[in-house]
Image (cartoon, rainbow, N blue to C red; front, side, top):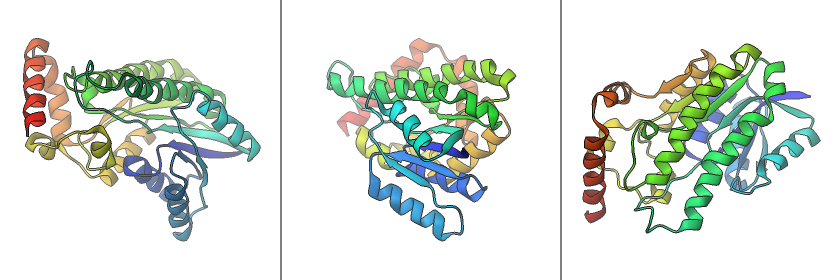
Length: 260
């Protein structure tokens, strides 16, 4: 079985940049996302750069059978996971009581259920290959999220789960890293309905920079990687701010964004 790095949500944004970074460092790839044309284009680009052409699978990762489909496809192609990069996810902006409930449950399915299943499904092959798991969360994992309550909560889960898994799998030689970027100019903002204000622009990093930071932290076996100096400073200061004040500030900021 040929070892590969499995990357979800690889058709755009941070996922596509992570694919480029892993490929540039000699990893063979198995890329999964909904948009087959984007995956094929990325695979062609990587192959044109002299790297092995990634295998691709077009699949909606919100589907309950998505992890089983991925496992079946890997086996059928003579591949096994040496690393798993759980990047796929989306957010929705607005009050939880007003947003479509099925869409929010779909967000939970993708951001939490699929990530959890893929993190646990390949532990034996990860251990065999001395590889690991890179889960993409966000700096919002450290915050309460009025105006994006479910999204923030899903990322808080990813952070907590990944930190615990880092400890649990350490004895098996499997590294687990959670990457927490701040705002990144990608298609994510358009789908979520987020407005990028001055604060977000100040904290923003490009997707390729986030991918490089995430890869370096992952290969060093770091537990948590917060991308960007200002984001790291913000995360360090957050425990000093009462939650009641954070909720007031964040809630007011969301209302201002909605009016604008």
